[in-house]
Image (cartoon, rainbow, N blue to C red; front, side, top):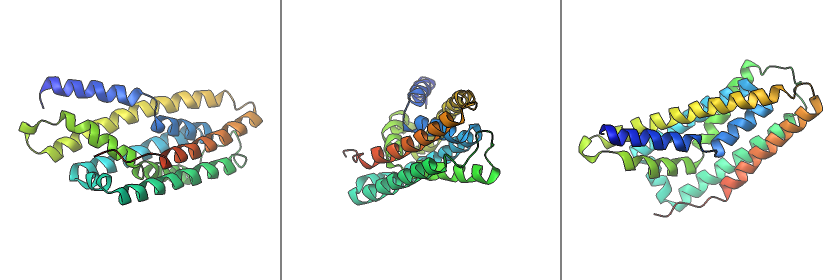
Length: 210
């Protein structure tokens, strides 16, 4: 890839990463619900889930899934149901955690795994990578799969950087609410409902036209 094309890719990827979307809203909701540690764990979890789509896209697996209405539907509804379950679970747990409690290490690991699954089970992420990255692949450069994966890794890294900034901002906002346990509980419950709403939104998503 020549320098100009790569610069255009970086600019486009950065703009897309900074535009608020489901990923940003998800990590923000997890931060408001469980604190900064939960937000960071979710961020790196969704990053790993994004890498799954990058590798699958580079190897052609994502194209197969998106070409099949049945496979797309199964993956979509699996991800949607998981998000709804996760949101309702977060809502129920809102009153079980004290505002001052730091999230335990085992819960950090659980939140990390949840982030991986949330992103890996989202076919819209696969569709995005397949629509965005090939525009910047240099046919004359050879190894298109390697180019796809390399650009995908950069895109995931930029998304993760933006997500970390969002987590810090959400954690700051949450810290100001620790003096009001009732309001913080309502915030946690609202975060759970919002995550469930992301699941409903995913369930309504349509398969990209061929």
